[in-house]
Image 1 (cartoon, rainbow, N blue to C red):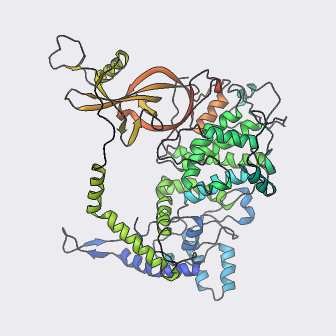
Image 2: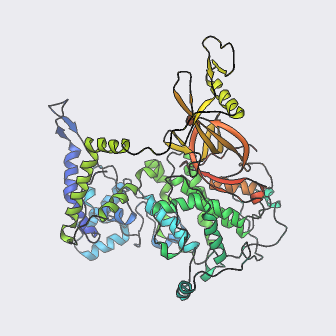
Amino acid sequence: MCIAGITPGPYSPDPQTFNHLLGPLVDELIRLDAGIIIPTHQFPAGRLVQVKLLCIYGDVLATKKVAGYASHSATKFCSFCHAEQSKLHLLQLSRRREKDETISAAVDSKNATSTTEQDNLLKASGVRWSELNRLHYWDPSRHVVLGVMHNWLEGILQGHFRYRWRFGWVPPSQKKKKRQNGSRSTTRPNKRTRTAIESIEIAMDLDDDDIEYQSDEDDDILLNSGLGGSFFTEGDVERFRAAMKHIVLPPGVPHLPHNLGEASHGKLSASQWHALYVFVIPLVICELYIDEVGAIDLHSNRYKFLANTAQLVQCTNVVFARKFKQGDIKRFEMHYKKYSQSVQELFENIKVQPNHHFALHTPQQMSDWGPLVSVAEFAGERLIGFLQKINTNNKIDEMHQSMITRGCRLQRMLASSDYNQLANVLDDNKPQRGRQTKSILLCSSRYTMLFNHVANQDRSVVKHGTFPVPRHGWVLSGLVTPIRSIDCNGVVVGSVSPRNCVVANVAGKMRYGLVRQCYQYKNRLGEDEEFLVMSTITNMYPKRTDACPTRPFRYLLFLFGMVVGRVEDTEQVVFPTQIVSLAAYRLLDDQTFGIPTNGIALIPHGYDACLNIAGNC
């Protein structure tokens, strides 16, 4: 990312000031659109270079100012369609904005003779003039990207957690008392207090045949039974936090504060919101609200709450997928619609926000731009964080100049070949800790697994002790060197957490396991090759389409992208090329989800739109 300019502070400019700032940039873009001749070493006479503005992206407030749209509180609040504020609660798309009508309305606003006339035009059309409209190829209705970091992570997900769940909410009258006395011990039962409810069927992807598999007890959780009408009781919050501590997250996934929900830990970052919904919540709430996997009542508040959460998680996986199919876009539309409909029944005082409407445009955005994570705001926000840390000595009038100077210096330094060489030298000079590991002889069972795997690739290999060795054959000695970790195409795997739970593609099927040991051995050419031995994990509840008592539970797991299984005593040899990803996991107590011992729940860290949950039925 290259810094082209920084708007003067200390506050965000208004739309009129933005146009003054954009004017020189647009003049330059017009000149670059026609093309300029740049001489190069290979072409001294020069090469024609043309530059066009592809899109603008960022948070909604900023893109509206730059592109010339009204704010999110205006009558015509949407940058993508003609939806009106009065119909926001309906959560429906309106007629999409088109280039000609949008630019025509912007020109009318520019030519208005008074501020009052401009305000009236803005209210009627939701459009004001932007300097970008001078670019002949610019389409304000198509070239604005919905920033999913702000819209989805810090908008939809954060809003659901704070204002719908109201997780950890404490009434103002009790905040002071809570600080003085600390958290009180609870005498609540292990599960939420139950009450009989009126049955309202949610079929989802389940049919009527599944409804017969219900609990004999006419009981359920009480909605909004927490403090101040929050969904979670104090006991729920404490159990959630306790379970969260036992989750193992892969490297690169940010950890969450142990006092999640309290104001004292400060704001969560966007990546923490993603980790919370994709990994932490699924690994916790299923155990909190499911007593028997084969007796889930589809009418119950328990199931409705879990399904509502699972639909939101499924949408999140699609939004941040690095690759997807057309069917995944349809899947987002379906689950976001179901999520939006079910929140009204589950939570009190629900208010639909503009962000919820903007998310309706996610399918079109995915069709236009591909994986939205590629045009998300993460890189820009990291740069903003760097610039905010620059010492400006409180000279407001020189702040933007100081920031861009420091930013340009950093960019030149990072691009320098000398910097890269220095970084490599520093890495090479790091002290190598640990002693040299000696070679050992594999035990019989692991040697047999390794031999069978190698023999599938090379028929000339023979077992040690074979005599005579066939011509052109070679002996797999069984001598190996234990190593700490293996780099599997960028995924570093080891035998200790958090790198020990893996997803592997073995013979075209997804397999899961806990790594027990990593080894090196000598191949036919005497070169070092690596492999790992893992304890296999049996997926106890893969998705099934036929009627069975556990079908609702299996469907929830599929939406969450979660595997619930059992760690077996059997081992399997896996090579680095077979490793797909690491996984977040949580070891389960005995008898959890009907698994007597060695239970485990895991979620692959793969960034797939629809996680491949494979296993034997």
